[in-house]
Image (cartoon, rainbow, N blue to C red; front, top):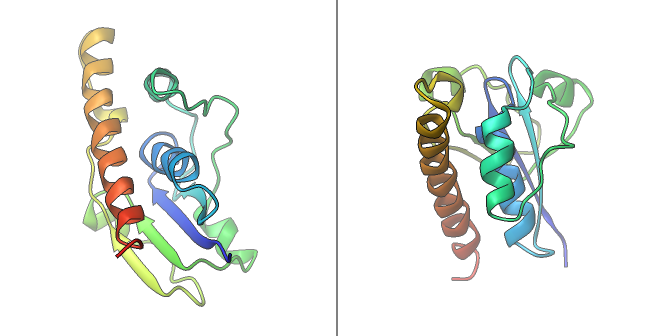
Length: 143
């Protein structure tokens, strides 16, 4: 079986794209190979690490990567999926050979404010939304 290669992209590669990568790799078995990258790579969001651990996915050892470095390296993908707002997604380079480019817009956990518990609750909502989109994406290949 040939794996479909998927790149998830967001602003800092610190939250949304990391969660999407984690879910696709954990839920798709051998059908997909996911990576993630950002326009301005930052540091992994500690709240995201925590909420992903709650669902059994450890991303604590992940690095944040640059989408532009992946492009310069000549990496190819079947799908490039931006998980940031549409305006930011427009800056994503066009990868050679991409069969499909999608945008799934989710709130940025880096923008959440409040107590730790409030930030965790908001981050869990985004995590669950991303998981739902990833599950729909996987299911779309079963039809």
